Length: 290
Image (cartoon, rainbow, N blue to C red; front, side, top):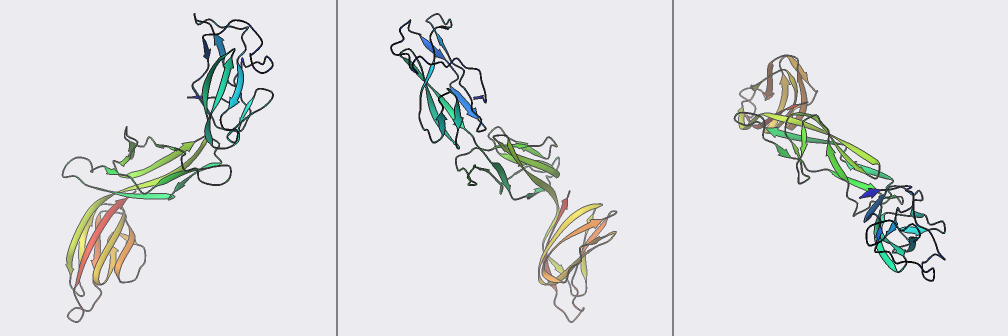
């Protein structure tokens, strides 16, 4: 698809149409099948009449005979065209009695928006080798027209950065393939929006772990940043050795960020008094994050 803004033209007028001008008949009209226009600047169509041998017929003018949808594309007396809004229509070219259509896609976009601003994905470790790839979803890009409204049929081109955290498959789907930070970009009509993707690695998952009253369980961890999520039937606290966690109160559901400055452990503590409080049964999920 050609992307044209101001292309030299052979579109001339003989009383606007060739009828009555006389002269030889062309065999074909040479012109692009499709054009994509990304702005509202006037433009012209590059077209030429050809004879049966494919030679240019400079004496035969090619004129603009009409526009399919004038609300999308307007034709001016100068022979120039201008996109008025998002849409697709056909321009009819005429040389003598021969006609052909050129499809023009007007891609007038005010901006491209992406949501959410940040995505989080968590990979699971394989028994050996790299983590299992994960299909990435939960995001959307929208093209916004000049009227401030989303354009339902606009196809935004989604790409990934070259950091290797994300990959785009031939079918257009996006996968997270390794821990780290990646960027999704959505582009259309010269406008781009970006989404940050944080890909973590699940390093520990314990279900229904017993945490006796006044006691704690520990999960060994390497130095790094972690997101710790705990769900329990009695309030619990989360802490680490060789580092610190964001301050929080004992709760049935705890989700907290922790940093280990050296190799150490994350501790899930039952603050109830030993012998008087209830034991906890906790599901503990620890994710290493970028």
